[in-house]
Length: 234
Image (cartoon, rainbow, N blue to C red; front, side, top):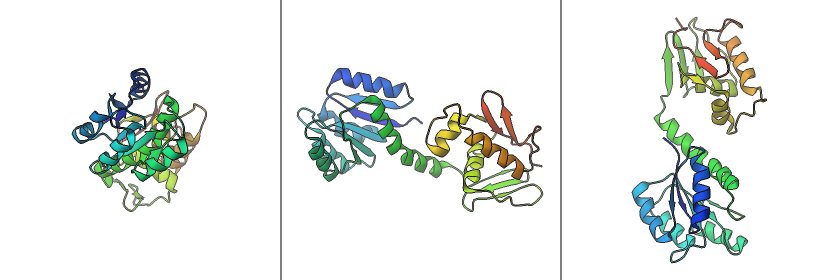
């Protein structure tokens, strides 16, 4: 499910620009031009995050923030308009999670949203995800952070290696790209040069007794990524 954003900005041109920018990056955005609509929209749509322009007519961002915080458990980002330092202090006082220090700019706002969204997405995904997986004689437990191989051995994995393996196992049978793995494990996009994932896969293969060059347990799908096999664990 895409991360849902309620964006309240009375400048229709800026609203359209930012909303379009975020939608192209796979966020679900509902844009509102009037502050009066913000609190009812919060209660009805239950977005994951709300971005408020401070200087809204009729009902400004501070008033919306104060009312929203009484019934809204999502993240609130406030965009300053007047005295920036004063706006920041007020925003925190009214319950905003992240009062911005500067006027709105799509790339900066996206970075703030990503930083605030990561804990929400992680908590939601972890709540819905199983605590363990079993494929043939292979077992992995997130609770104990242990792995058991078909021969009964328990490989000694580093924290980073376990997280990488869990990311692959939780998508068993599917091809997972380097970019997806980088975003999930490190919160950044793959730049085409970073070999962290490849190095981690190489180490995992050794510890999982997956012969180099003929790997069947963690397969390389050329040009696409890696695939954890469901069938290679008997």
